[in-house]
Length: 169
Image (tube, rainbow, N blue to C red; front, side, top):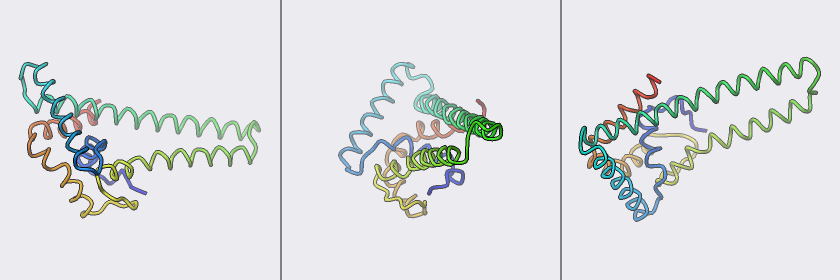
């Protein structure tokens, strides 16, 4: 299983931003062209004010806010449901078998959620056996790197916006 807490935020958002790309290079190039068209449309919409860094910062800020709010909501729901199940068990509304069944269902859902990142890594051509190594990081950079080099402003704005959105909101 991948430990998301140890991954640098910039690496995670970079992988998520390109996570829809396939291992086939033509499909990856098609995805890149789509992202570049979206950047061009955003630049036209903003009439070029701020350029790619501004567009990247806006997208990153939104992604950072969404990630933090999703995480906060998941923690609040988990704690609330845990307290509710403990209270129901304490007052006799649930027996041992029902609690075991609820625990099993919760574990299955947590495992399914944890499997999302390895699936995304496989889609961009990185075979994931449950661990992230420097070699896999180099493979990811080989896929993402050329786009990041062509759009340095967008990439920098995206990372900075994500960090600001995650920290401030």
